[in-house]
Length: 156
Image 1 (cartoon, helix red, strand yellow):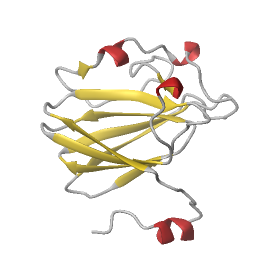
Image 2 (cartoon, one colour):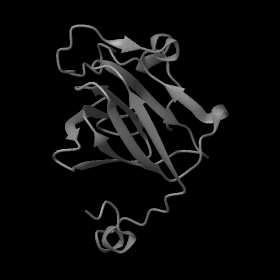
Image 3 (cartoon, one colour):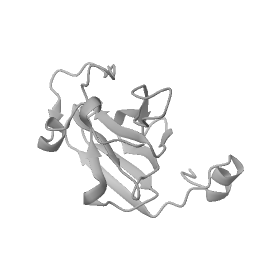
Image 4 (cartoon, one colour):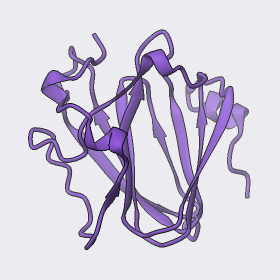
C-alpha cells in the first residue's frame, strides 16, 4: 500500500511538508489520548493512520474566528481498513483505542515543541464529542488536567 505521496497530495491542493513521524502504542482497549495541539509558530498538520488495531479518531476546530469553533468530526481508523485522517493546523486531535495492542502512526509538519504544546478536555460538554462506549477509559495525568475549551489558549 502507498500510505503517502507528496505528488498526490499536491494534486489535491495540499502542499504539506512532513518533517517527523510519531508512533504510539497502547496495550489496552480504552486508552484515550488528547485532545492535543501545538500553537503557532509550531502548529502541526497531522496525517494519522493505524498500523495495528483500531481507534476512534477526532478533530476539534479550535480557531477563534471560525464559524465551526468547537465543532468536531470523528472517524474510525483501523489497520484493516487502511484509512487515514488529515488533521489540519487549528484543530485539536485525540483518539480512543477500540482494540488492545493498537499502534498509531502520524506524520506531522512541525517538530514537537514543549513550549507550544496544549490540550483541551476530551469530555468538554460544550464540544460534546460522542466517544464510543468503552467500560474503562485510561487517561494520562496531563489529559486529566487539561482545561475546557473556554479556558484554553487556542488559535487566533
